[in-house]
Image (cartoon, rainbow, N blue to C red):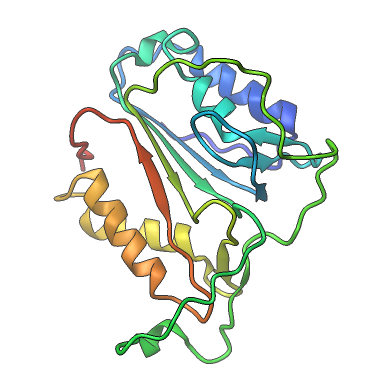
Length: 216
């Protein structure tokens, strides 16, 4: 079952996720949350970064993930909860370094990359604020995939879109029938890292207890 929410404010993002977490998921095998937005760095205890609502206020990734903990989402206890975050992790640009081999096809004429999210003014004053949480539960059955390393820009092609989402979609379509989630994300990281003049390397926080295969 797929639901799409577009152009939500900070408060609406939280409300939509809380509503999702409070449903009865006992007949389902897992929950997947995919967020595409502007992003920034944020103080954290477990999961770095934050995504912006359309009102310019940030929602920490840590807060998003913990909406689905055992207390807030009991019907997903012991089941995988997957989060895919497409957002800039900061404003640093990784120029990479020279290597012997390169992939010319990754740089088609007229497809110079651009930041996936231009610098976005944070209306809360500073994004680098903790979410007033002194302690958090130990993550269990949580998998958080980021489009880029914290502090760095995510890139997109003006024609085909986000490097990360485009590659994620392509890799899953080709390999999800036979490979586990972690192997799929390694393929994504390798493919994205070879694109463009500027470099981008997706990464993840894996607190799953078993290999996860999608039923296709």
